[in-house]
Image (cartoon, rainbow, N blue to C red; front, side, top):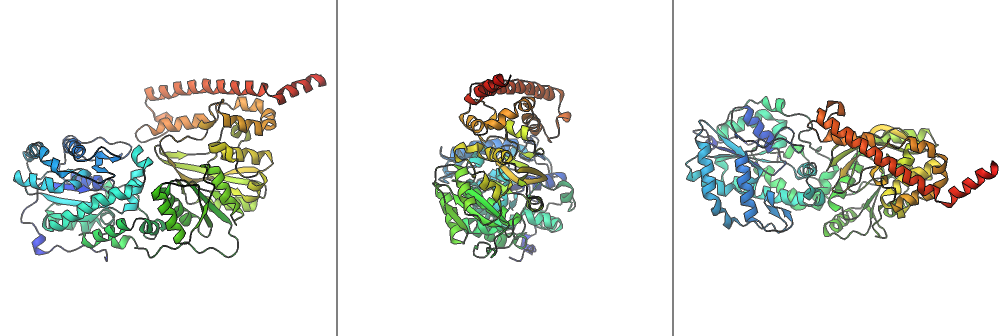
Length: 602
C-alpha cells in the first residue's frame, strides 16, 4: 500500500512478446486512453473502430467486431430486468455463463481473422472484463499467447464519469455506478490473481503520475515497448478528472459504500502499479465541527430520493464553503438507498432535518432556511454541486452593499446536456419575462424573510418568484462572473426560461397575479423583451450538438440555417405567448378598473 510499482521477478519476464494484448477494465476507467497509447506506439487494435462521440471525443479505440459480439453475448447471459444489459449488469447481478459456449465458434473465427495480421495485435473493450476466462480459453484454442493489460480507477471518479455519458439509465439511477464498478473490478482482480505471469494490473491514475514506470512494467511483463513520453502528448487536461487525495467525497463514499472502498484497497495491494499513495483512506466519517459564533453562510440542501447524489452535494459544500453551516433537509424520501445515505450522515453528526414530505423542494428549502444561523443562505439542490470561486466573491458583494438581496452566477451543466450557461447581468424586465437566475444563489437572509421565503405552491417557479418579490420590495440583485454550481441535467429536466414558455400554465398565472401591479407597470418593456431569454439558450444548445462545441459562427451552413429557422419559429411562438398573456391581463378586474380610471381622468 505504499504506492510503488512491484518490480518484475525473473519468472515475470517473458521469453517472447505476448500476442494478442487484451485491454480490459471497468467502463470509464481509462481503457480508451491506454489503448490510444499502445496504438500510437505501433500496436494495431482494429480496422473498424467505434466513432468518437460526446462521451469520448478523443475516440474509444474500440474494435467494433469484438464490441458487437460482446453485446450479443451479454444480452444472452443477462435477465430482462432493470439494469444495463449492454454492460452485462442487471440488478440481480446474474450473469449466466452457461450460454457462452454458444458463441465459441464466432469468437474463434474472429480471433483467427485477426491472427492473420503480422506482428502483435490486440483489442480493447471494457466488457472483456466480464468475459476474461471465456476469451482465455478461445485464445488458447487458437494457439495464441495472450497478454492482459488490466486497468482500474477509483469508484468515485468512475461514478462521476458515468454521469457525464448522457445516458438516461445512469442519470436516473446514479446508485448503479458503485454496484457496477464493484461487479467489474471483482472479476478483474480474480483473473489477475490467477494469471499474474501474463497480466499487468495497473491504476490509471498511477500511469498518469508515472508513465515511465508503466512503460518499464509493460515491457518487462508483456514484452510491449511504448514511448514513455507519448502519454503526456496524448493526455489532455480534463480527459480524466480525478479528485484530490483528501477530497471530502472519499470519506463519504467510504462510509456509504464500504464494499467498493474495500475492493479498491485489494486492487491497490495486488496491482503492479497501484494508486494507493494517490488517495488517502479516510477514518470514521465525522461532520465538520460547527463554528461557535453564527457562521456567515448556511448551505441548505433539500433532498428527496437523491441519496447517492446527495453525498456529492455535501462534499462540494465542504470543499467550497469551508466554515459554513450545512443543513440537509429530507423531504419525505422513500428510496431505500437514500434512507441509508441520510442515516450515514446523521450518525456522522451532520444536521439532517425532516420536512413535511409533500414533495415540494421549495417547502423543504424554507424549512432549512428557517433553521439556519447564517446571515446568508445558499440553497443547493441535492443533485448539483457547489463550484469553487463563487462564494467568496458573492460574500464580498453582500458585505459591501446592504441593498443587495441576492448574488448569482453562471452554471456549468453536465449530464443530459453539457456546457457553461452564462447568466446575464440583472435586468428586471428580462426577469419578469423569464427566469435567468439559477436557484443556487447567495441570498441575504433578511431579504428572504422580507419576502416570506419561497412560495411552496409554485414548485419549480418558486425561485423565480422569490427574485421578483425581492425586486418588487426594493432589493437589488447582482451577478458575479463566476460559476456558482455544477448543474446536473437529468432526463425531462426543464431549463431556465422554458418553464415560463407556456402562458396557460396555472403556476405562471399565480406569479402574474401575485405581482400584477409590477407587470402592468412594465408591460411595454416586457413586450419589447420577448426574445431576450431564449435566444442565447437556443444558440448554446445548438452549439452543444456540434463536435467540439463552439459558437454558432463556427457551425456548418445547414446547421446554422436550421438554428435560425428554429429561432424564428420560437420567436413567433413567444410573441403568441405574450399576446396570450396580454389578453389574460386585459381580462382581469385590475385591468378593467385601470381603464375606467383612465377614462375618468380623461
